[in-house]
Length: 233
Ligand code: PGA
Image (cartoon, rainbow, N blue to C red; front, top):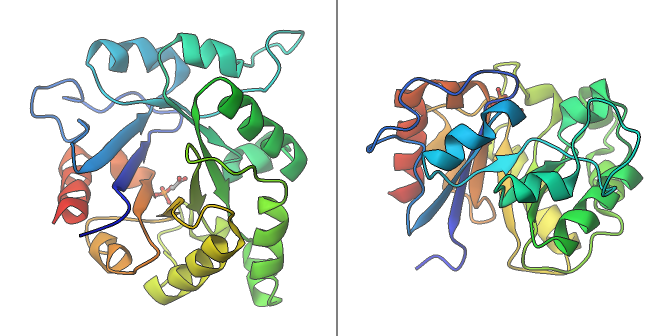
């Protein structure tokens, strides 16, 4: 018996919802024994809502409103029906210069609204080579509140979209460290970075890996379906 429910996330990034996402037997539907959560573009939120998928936002600002052209607020994402929100995805940190402090403000704002933040953390290749992985993760976790609503995603920056996933042992080491740092020993921790149907099971076999955050492979319904099947096996 697993103590923590499995969690498989589909991060569609800036891509349209894959064909058939709304079918009755769509691989993007959630299950009683495994949360399946999709993260579409903001313009597709209502489509996935109508299709009755479990879904979240790819990111939002903590302020309720204000002069932030082109951005979305956490509150608006909640109104749009989101249950989850990605906070601090490495592409947001890189392209939009989101800092650790700002990402933690997002986590807190999400919690206050009753959303489930999915806090994304992970080291760059330079940081790993310099032996700084644990230090970086510790800084990215600084100030994390204690809440059962929180999900953490360990995504080494060098593995995202690169085709070079971490090894299951590298991921397991980081996950054990993250669990140890977390105030909630039962926090769900996902691995993300070049996950596909060939490597999903090897990550899920590790004690501290509770699920997967899938980017590129989540756009291929058959591949994503195989990943969800691996999580439910
Ligand atoms: P990837 O992306 O699976 O394409 O590496 C993962 C992510 O960005 O969350």
